[in-house]
Length: 97
Image (cartoon, rainbow, N blue to C red):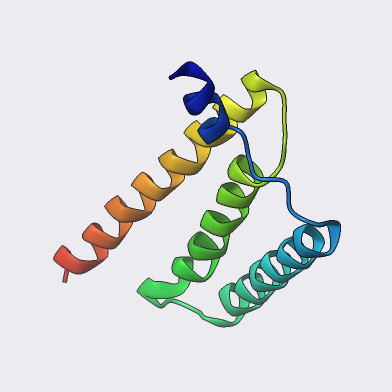
C-alpha cells in the first residue's frame, strides 16, 4: 500500500519537449495576464487576469517538476492555498454586488 501511495505522490516524468512546452505556454499566459492587468483600469475583474495564470504556475511547479520532499510539500500547500484564496475572491466578487 505504501508503494502505491509513493507512486501517486511522485510527479510523472514527461519528455523534455512536453515539460518545456507546458512551461512556455503557462508563462505566456502569465505575461498576457500581466498585460491585461496593466490595461484594465478600475474594473473588479482586473485581478483575475493575474490570479488565474498564477494557479497554473503554482500547480505546474507543485505537481509536474520533481523536487525534494520538503519543497514538494510546500509547493503543494501553496498551490492548493492559492486555489482556496481564488475561490474566496470569486465568492467575494459574486456576493459583493
